[in-house]
Amino acid sequence: QLTNQIKKFFLTKTEANYMIAKLDIEETQSTQAYDGFIQAKQSEIKKLNTSLGILLDSLLDQSVDKQTFQQKKLELVSRKKTFEEQISSLGQNRNNWLGPMRDFIQNAITTPEIAASHDLMTKKAHAVKIFGSNLKLTDRILLGEALNPWAALCAAPTSRNLERLYILVRTYFISNFS
Image 1 (cartoon, rainbow, N blue to C red):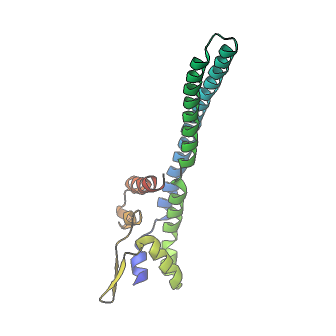
Image 2 (tube, one colour; image 1 turned 135 degrees about the vertical axis):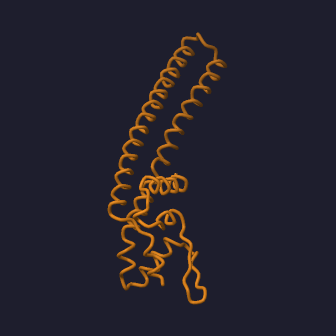
Image 3 (cartoon, rainbow, N blue to C red; image 1 turned 30 degrees about the vertical axis):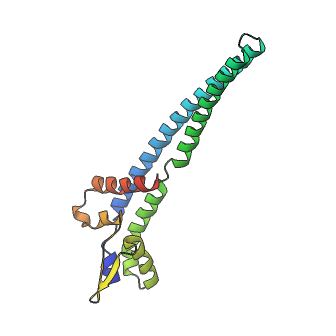
């Protein structure tokens, strides 16, 4: 019964290749956008550093009083810190979802092999990925509802819209891993 439950949730090689190609494109585009963002923020930080230098020179030349210097310095350092935090934050969360989605695709490709194997522990581990703890034994019949994104694979491969499937799976991983 476990075999019958898990064998419905798979990706064909064609579907997997399509999804991986789309992921590769998104990763490239994301990296380019990220690099542009970082360059812009680093440029702003350089301008702020220049302004801080000019402000210090103004204090040393006594063309700015100490109170004005401290206020302006605090403002400039605060803006610089904000830009640095934005760079750090974006770097930490950037593309976190790509790895788990690639793992999902690889797991979905192997479903038919796992279903055909005689290794009950491997089947059980795969079932946990698909159903979580949602499997129930009722009247000697194994029932379960697949978790997202596995639920998107329940449709027969011949009736699947690849773009829609990709978007559903992608949305799940962006929402849960970004």
